[in-house]
Length: 493
Image 1 (tube, rainbow, N blue to C red):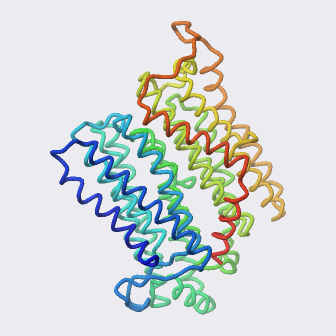
Image 2: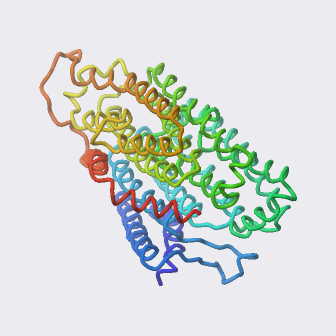
Image 3: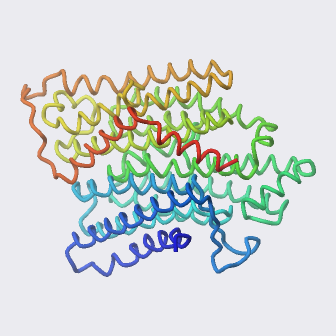
């Protein structure tokens, strides 16, 4: 029965997306409650799968019992299960929040469509993590891209349509680039199953080095575009700033990370460490990561719209993850994995906190945050916790992330990367600290300094408090998570 759970999880998400239109004439709370129930079922299922994989080991699932050379194969290991559990857990928090803010700016008649897209999004992300096939990865990527662009454009505004058009154009270039790389590998090996392709690549490296190098280039570039890795980030700030805040949180905290996880699978499971080092991919990744960490923060400093600022901040934070990958070591990969978790929590907290401010006060300009900490203490306190984590202040997950990256850089003999980490942290402080200072140390236009809990739905307040608590809790007690992430890193080699 346990081996059937991955398929059940996928069917639950797909089934939920299909039945939402049937509840069109009923109370919409029935739909959201049913959706929350489905999320919790998949969450429990993911915990059971993680326990099974840890105690019994990884397992394969062949759809229709076809051989891996012909059929679709799923690989359920620590890597796929741990990150699917992370995604579902974070989306549950964001989902509860979204029921309170009415998905911020989405027309009431579009609510059903919004949640349909959300469950298809989850179906695609779990499919990407579970699948052990390069072509099926492409299929799920396309589903994810189409769903994402639909969520961005669901608010019927010109800026949403513009951002969605830019997103779909660039992401289709990324998809075609990835697909061309898969075609090259199929031409060399005759397979799309990841393990069979890997065996063929290792044996064919001496015979077809140009083809394999070209495939690496196309696939890494394609995924780099979809993951908004600098300098392919130009679609991200507009897309994340115009989408509803709950969607912005999902896009930045989860969706972008899924594409990075695809890149990790390709580099470590398809090509292997020896080949990617032979073609100097780690050096390229480290250079791109370092530039992205600095430039993303510089762009963020220049923004006046708080959501665009958070979008550019994501570009810098993606650089941290790519830096960990580029070190091509267990410590580096573990640090990259930890920052995926850490940034997911912090960026979700930031976007949802800002979403609460937009919901309650209708402001987005960073210059309008004077005294907002007294009017909205919970939202701004959580914002401050997450912002301090982004800077790398101790007692937060962000500090553990930067500490792990620094230790990995020392282990790899890359002292210059530590300098980049320090400079990036300083730049983060330049655009986060002024907002915090304005919120709590400056008077608002009414000069009111009486602190009262903001009058927003509890379904918005509770997720914010949970995220703030998790940022501190994991920052204080990271040991168990680090052990699981080490196991996930080992499962890729």
